Length: 116
Image 1 (cartoon, rainbow, N blue to C red):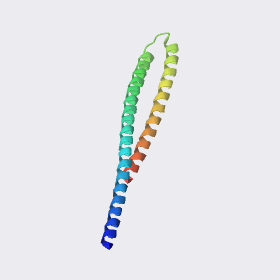
Image 2: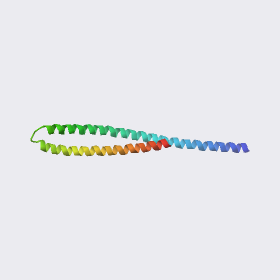
Image 3: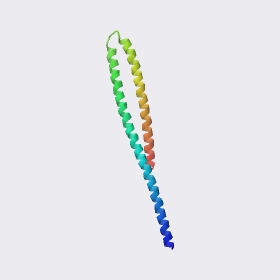
């Protein structure tokens, strides 16, 4: 009878260990899915950031070309382009801020996943 009780305790312990492992795997799987999602979003934000940076650089080049021209309408064009440049610079800064937030969230989740 004692051998049967010992086996029952052993089986019970093994079942508990298996349950712990299963829970950990599920949490890890969820972490990996979330990590992959954040990686993809970060990649998209970086790509968008690159496109916006290219656009801003193109507009800056246009501004420089206009500054080198000596047309009478330069002053009015310059005012419009300067405001556009400021708007895009603001958008670019906002995007960089969002990208930094995503990257810090990604790193936080990544470090949490490594602890699991």
